[in-house]
Each structure stands twice: as C-alpha cells, then as structure tokens.
Length: 168
Length: 168
DNA sequence: TCAAGGTACATGGACGTCCACGTATCCGGT
DNA sequence: ACCGGATACGTGGACGTCCATGTACCTTGA
Image (cartoon, rainbow over all chains, first blue to last red; front, side, top):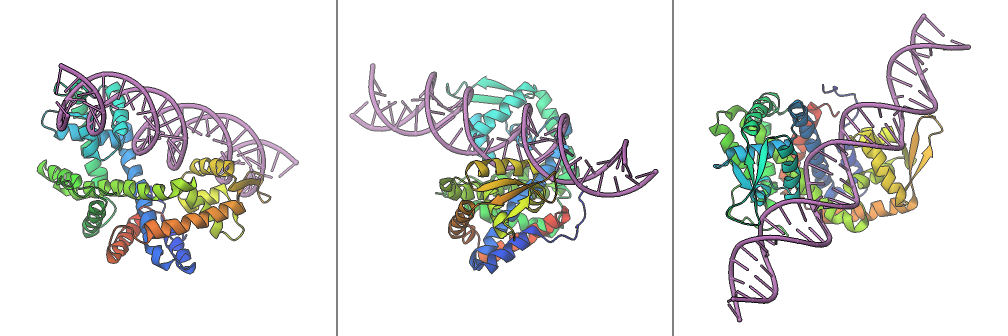
C-alpha cells in the first residue's frame, strides 16, 4: 500500500535545510521534530483507521471502549474518562454520543454525583472492543513500521516529551 | 503553564502494562508507540497553535505560506502544494480559502494547465509568514521540550518511520 | 481526428478536536 | 442555613482532515 520512494527527497529534511540556510540553524532541529511528529501521527492514524473502519469504529471511540473495558465497574464518569484519555471533555461527549447511538455504551446518571454522567460499557461494546483489539494488535501494533529497538527508543523519547509537557 | 506531575501515573505506561497482562506482550510496545505519537502530536499542535492564534494563523496555513515563500516564483499549483505538504488536496483547498479571505494569498488560473489553479503568495502573506516564523522559532522550535540529543534521536526515528510508510 | 482514461479542483458531508457559553449540582466557609 | 465559587456536562460554533462525487480539462492511443 505504501508507494515506495519515488526518488523525491524527504520534505522535512528539505525544510530543515532551508531553515539552516536562512540563519535559523538553532531552531531547525526543533522545527523538524515538530513537523515529524505531525506527519507520524497522520501515518499512524491512517493505519489504525483503516483497520477500525470496517468495524464502524474510530481510534478515539476504540480508546474509550478499552478504557471502559479495563475499568473495574465497566463504567466511568465523563470527566474521569476525559482525564485518562487526555482529551477535551467535549471530545468524550462526542464519542459517547456516537457509541451510544451504535448501542455499544449507555449513559446513566451518576448516583454518587448529581452533576455527573456515567458511561457504561454494554456487552456489544465489550465484544467489539476485543475484536478490534485483536485486529489492531495483528495488523498495526505488532508491526508498527520500525525495528523493535527503534520502537522502544521512540516510546522513551516521547515519554520524556510528555512528562516535560506535564502529562504526568 | 504545564501543571507539574500530579502524582498520577503515565497513562500510556499503564495501558502498556495492561496489554502485557492480557497476553498481548508482543503488541504492547507498538501500542505504546502509536498512542505516544498521537499524544505528542496533540502537545505540539497545542504549543504551535498558541503562538499562531494571535496572528490569525493555524499550523496548516502557516505551512502553506512558508511553502510558497520558499518557492522560486512565490506561487504553486494546488496539487504540488498538496504533495509537498503531504496532505489531502482538499485540505489545501480549505487552507487557500481562508488565506485568500485574509488577503494573504491569491488564486490565479495556471497558464500552463487549464485545469490548474495557482496559489500566489501576496506581500502581506510573506510578511506574516516571516513574523510567525520568528515567534515559532523563539517560542517553540528552539526549545521543543527535550534535550538537543533527544530531539535529534526523535527526528531520526521518525524519519525511518516516514520512509517505511513510503513518504519518500 | 477523436474517443477513453486520467488529472486538477471544488463541493458537500462526516468526523474529531477545541473553545466559549450556559445550566445544574456540589462543597466549603461564614 | 446559606451563599459563592468550583465542578460536571451539554450545546453550538470554528477548524482541519479525509472521502465521495461532479465537472472541467489534458493526454494518449487507435
């Protein structure tokens, strides 16, 4: 599916060269890093979505399903899910809307907090989440496109970056 | 601005642990890599957008302005810009719509191809692009949130990943 | 010459993301 | 007991991304 190198140069290396040529050498590597991360996300997102589309899922919704699957009670308040997934609360609301319409989760009032809404995983949701996990593991996660050691290095560097951003 | 570690654990390390505990050890590292890239992109995008918002720009539009700035003629066909930026042609159309409304670029028919549209950088666009570059270099690119060596490592690993995906 | 297939763009729709705002509820201090 | 600030969600809007479709236009081959 990946069209092999067309002989074209790496666009990011090209931009880095231009940055240096304009006297921005001290910012060139950072520019390359930011741009590379953007592009890598695009690549990963496309791979994952390709696997999930036949199941009627997106990565966001899949992540929410798995979060619920791993929770003891099979249900979580929206705010808690938002924090764990590190996305805006309205993004969770959006995902819940669609998952609920698909009969995969259910909204219930939180008995412990009158303001809160619990998102509860339904059996169909759990089943689909596990099916999706099997496919993702096989088609994406087990072969992310890099040698094992490079993957570990990537995860380590990004862990530092996330920690520096206050993620944990 | 980054709230220091709240004592909470790294959510991705947590997910990795759960993956291994469910017998998916061989996919755990890849899962962590994909998730890390997604989150890193979110972090970088937020940082960049914060700098560009006061200028009325987004990163996509900024990238298009800089691409035009670096082009010899100061103008490019939409398709060419799409390939260089590695985004869908309709995304470029979208960006051009907004940049044109802001008086930063101009659409012209391509004299060399009756089907084509040239996007031409206007003086105001060039000026704003350089102003934005100065701020991005200073506030983001020169301090991307990692030690110099780690940044270089990140760029290298992602370069391999992009090459593997057929980017160049 | 001319018809068939491919290319270049624009449009409309779906999706995920965030922000700004409003409403309902909880909680802490007086 | 109560009032004011904080919290939990939902809504509506903006944005960028992609896909599917339609409409021009180019180019190739018979």
